[in-house]
Image (cartoon, rainbow, N blue to C red):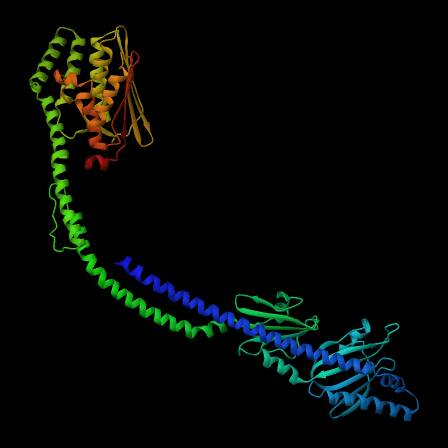
Length: 580
């Protein structure tokens, strides 16, 4: 159900998210495009202003009559001086009125006598002026073209007047820019109420045309951090703002506009909210429909799954088929599978367990074990009375072998008990073939809880004697090695007997893989009654029964060289073999 809900709601959520993202992106691009146009418009407006100021300044400088009369302003003849001042004042006043929409006053400074003549709409003023400090001081350093400075009562444009031949400073001109000029710049750029506008001169000083600059804190540090291009419009995005930057007239003025990113989000929010509401409605509808359809489909599947979880060996629960659709076919297939598995377990699994149990019981019931055990104790006692300790030891070992064989309980025993049983068998063989038989047993320290199936080691050692060494003349050698490798135990039993040719070895291996005991060379022993069922194949089958198909016996042999039998056992935790 959860998966179906996810599959139905995921496309709706994805489409809603993409629509919201695209809406915001569209608003952002629209805002950028609109402000690009406004920046270009403001740049053009300021360029026209600077061009007009340049024309005004050059008009004064190319007026030869006016420039000639400037020399007479300091004439000792008061009548000449008055006439000269009147002519210069009238000329400046005429220029002032012709640019009345852009400037408020006009000042002409004469460096020779440090006099300044200012004209405005309210009158004229002649004053002495020292330009070593203040906004006029830049003219002393070098001939300067137009530049702007911020004063207490407004923004002024300045221009120096220099003699052409030697660039000597003759004086300077300044005009006060009308406040309406800067208001016009603000109206052009002020498309967003919370945007900030910065207008600075070529020295980085803010001019009075700036707007909302206090919202951005330290303006000087901000201006230094921005990468204003030398030409063209620059756009820079930070964590909080979009900055639009442009230099006017080769840097005489710098125009910067800052728009908060929240403004973009606010503009796109109504459309985004509408998309979210619509998407939420679709998501809710998808969830409801998914639940309705999934319940119709999942209820029979969940019921079938619960039935399968409750199914146990020999008590399989069949599912009643109520539908004729695909779910009905699934339930019918489940019933067929359960019935088939039950039959297979009864035939294969339970049959093998019964066979193995019968084989062990048949071995134990071949003789009367208690009578034979008591007889061996009697013989041992008589041997001690006759001072024959060797006979007593042999009978005691045979008694231990018999007791281990008839003991009941779990089919899994500890390595210590199985090793002791194998060593008892080896002792009997060494007594039989004294001086001829040598058996070497090497083993690592193993965990005390480590277990293996009963009658695993001794039958393989017995096979080494019966099938590998009996037909060999001379000395015999049997080596048993038990090695621990990480969480597994490797067991190898090797003899230097007559070995097997490739054909017999292949038949044995096929028998081990296929489960056909008649292919094993040890089937002859079984037919003759010697430990019937406890042979190499029996050991292999019980190892796989207890530990899985990956575990079992591996045999390697070479004619005339001997045989080696290998198998690997897992080291099981105590809880594991208790469950077994």
